[in-house]
Length: 400
Image (cartoon, rainbow, N blue to C red):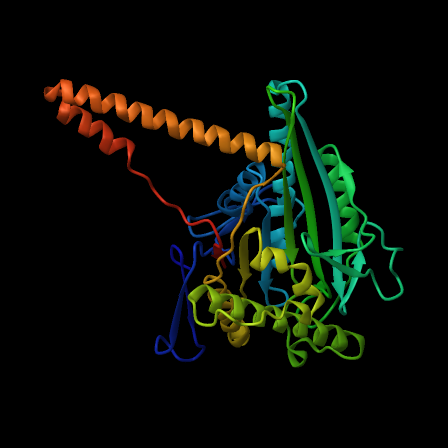
């Protein structure tokens, strides 16, 4: 990893077979760290990317989008044992993106509540599900849906959703952290030859964040955001993992759903490139792609993390992962602010008011310029500065 570039060298080929991939970020976290007394893995050199750096680059953007009222999604994809769960959840002192996001969210809420106007309200709720052998399980209420799992329904204006899924309100970081730990303990994990704590199911953590405020006219203004943090089960080869019986069945179902996810991403990428505009998107081919339809091709700003193994025996799996997320870069989504009709009307009126004020200011400036020719150069310099803008692509960053 150098800058935003990742290079992969085929074993025993020297530098004769090198493939290069470019992403928004490329993080090296295999070595180059020192363990502090509290267990935190701090960088020993500039190359090592610790958990705080990853959150600063990725989690801060998710937090900002949530406050602005956008739906946000983050995927962790890669081979089994490559560090997906570590990136998302972390361990002990090395908190991952999910706990760091929750911690910062409630810190910001507490700070804003101190100076918020009367009638301002913030609501946070949580749900956790896992997809095990194409069945949906509620991790916060494991007794529900034991026979065949929970059912997936579809609404025209809402998309796919899980019926009878438990959504719990949380009022502090302590509340949400204890709930996430509870759901994590209920996850289906098992030991394989490649990973002693291999996730045998895809896990989706959904955080719903609602902001309410009172307008000057006494109307309730509301913005909402759904943050989906997805820890995908790792792709695996039965020969390497030593899977048999139940583990083999789990691995087959995992690879099947990941294959469907790959087909969906390829179809979306082709649409983004304009190759096949009439392609039928196979969202219905698996439970995973049904629940991720809105995140992949709908109203959500999305980040994908690719976790890689540095071992030479995993070369083919690592190359497959890099090609997978490289295709994902071509996906384009149309994210919009989730707000009530009243909130949208107020925001549009404010934007229109700002536009009219700008036109009025330009008209006044034009009148002054015509009456004062000597000030033309100075006025032009001011105009040049105020009309420059920098565009930052935020739609679908893809980060190994």
